[in-house]
Image (cartoon, rainbow, N blue to C red; front, side, top):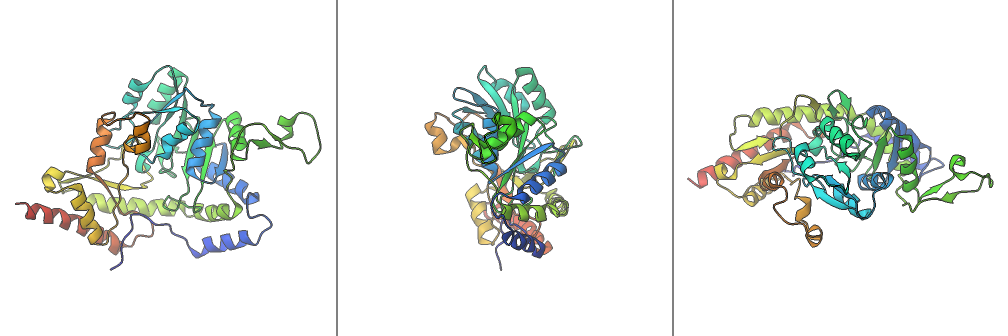
Length: 388
């Protein structure tokens, strides 16, 4: 019996054909398809501008640079996320500050953001965990009162909506970043994008993506000739290729289809687990539409009478490759060296102790969904019986 991974990309023949066409074109690095991909993603998300880059991490980095973060500044984010959400602050020599999560959604708690503010705070980076949007209206209100930037980490949330607005529209933020990693809603293998409605930020994002170099006559002043360019900032080579953009363009056509499948699988899981008192799925608030990037269950190990490693290993024995999202960022050794200690965010730490991620991806077969449901129930029964 084959293993069921927690996530997997879905590459179809038309995706392969698009990439083959791009390989045969004049440009295979940063060419015209990058701009097409940017326009399509911006249009889908209802944003004015988009800057495609080689990863979601790069998108976070250039967003922080565009916001002008520097040494001595601080940024507030969630600890239940991939390390890139706060590493981007460290890249700018700014200091990460962690606000705790809400118990139901595992998204950042606006009330704890307020408690962590100080005169050095420059940016809030809310993470739309598992595809569920944070309370952006409340976060935007906090930012406006304190003259802060808001950069939405929407790596999990392409296709999600908050109070009728698409995530990525940056209605409640200065910039939004997306990821196109292989396990995300659509993939360019590796890739990301920064979205904004601010022309000045857009120009800075473009600059930092490409070594800080520009050929735009608007910025160059004197006409030195058609060959002329200038390096105006210390930027990076974060460019996306035309090959990757071709894949992204093809994948984007299937995004709504992928989202529909994800929602259907989540509905099956929720229905099947609704009567299991030992487990609890994440909540979906009535003012959002989640993109359902992950399906996370919280296990009551006292009721199950087993440890987390017991369950993890039992799933793996059954060929179900569960995962864990996430180890609190400040648990990592590098962050400990910076002085972070346990106890900063009690809800996040409790979440880490209880959470496991079940398989969820569009290519998942119905029999695989049934197999995951059956295995979950059987594992719980097994440990309950063995400890009586």
